[in-house]
Length: 172
Image 1 (tube, one colour):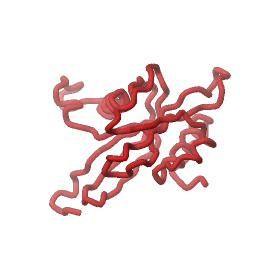
Image 2: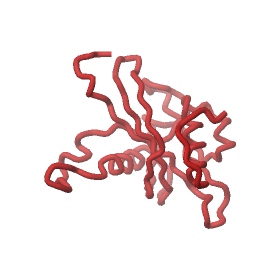
Image 3: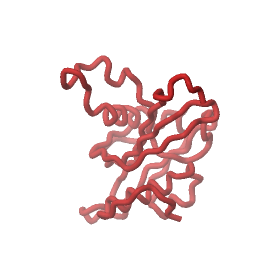
Image 4: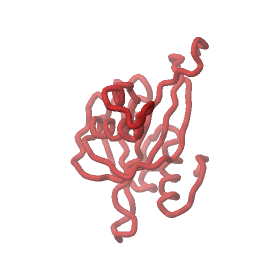
């Protein structure tokens, strides 16, 4: 890792999009998972959840909400990324957990994992990002080759929806 600027991280945000379940009596919740395109540099062909990198353009062209700050920048980025990658709208974004890594190319990365409710739209994959998708229950998700840690995040979301809070941990 380049020690020039230890404060400089790539920041990404992901959405565990939930459809169904809840108090409406609808069937068990399903989670949107996508398979990363085979041409992706990181984790090609593995299953994950939609999201992407935050860019300064996500806020620089907008008026500041206060004298010094833009608010809701992560939420705005997440809505944009989910719309671009899978074509749907989301709502009720909530924080789940965070993770950090240093990629093999030496880039440090911070990922903020959120949950969100499906709000509408039809899935339209951005083919250079993802080539398949599924709405999977927690049990069905075990049958997909998920990037390590994603299944545990799905369990966290299911727990949170059932009123149980938990920090990230191995759940299987």
